[in-house]
Length: 296
Image (cartoon, rainbow, N blue to C red; front, side, top):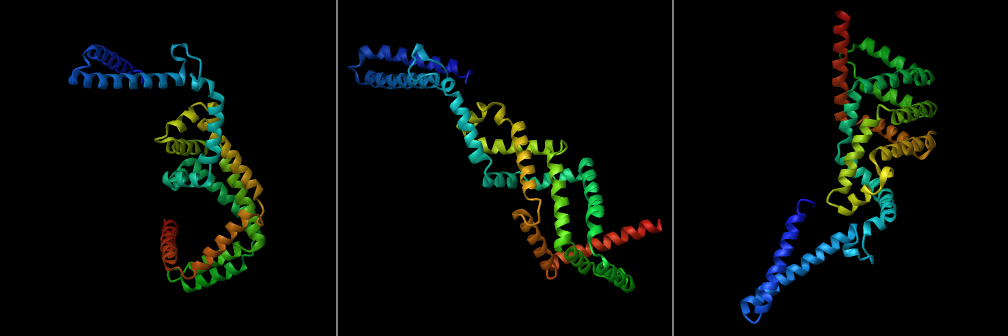
């Protein structure tokens, strides 16, 4: 705006000069036309100058309804907070932004990083110590014995995966697994290692939210530290951790939903040819890798 101000001022002065030159000769049709055009441009320029100036200062010392932004700073801050709480952080808005920003790709990137792989190893180690020790593995042992006698090359891994899922999803085992998984998610979300990924997502969400909207940018600009990406990420972390704490029980709304989805997945796995082919293919690759390492 500071770069275009001299140009706009020059045009306003030129229009005023043309108006003053043509006004005494307004009896002539040509000069009357020039007078009206320059007069309209001059009036429009003055109106625009007054409107823009009145947003930030008091033009010509006029105190009435001027300096709107400085006077309304607190109201704009409150408006920005309300907009963020009612619009930016709404579930549909967050879902749209997360879907558009390809959050799953970033989750995979985090899982492939050294920090992510370390946390995955800790999770698997915890599952082995905390969950599997409470599970009845006798049916799995019998299935594994059958597989050994039939030969691993002709053995289908899908029945074992389905059986493992059903053993895991028995109420007692599922409640222990859900509690452990829930608290692990709490630690991961609250950790400093996840903070940079959440910060990048929040920046992209805010860019999407303020795109092509001057008032939204203005509201966030006057929001201060309360509307900074850092503070919003901290708020999201606290709310997410608190939400998980409130749903640690398998009988909570989130626990029942996840449990039901897992049961539905393993029930559908019996008839899902695509997933069965995926499991068998990776089973063969894993067995080949193990045998090669054993031979080596």
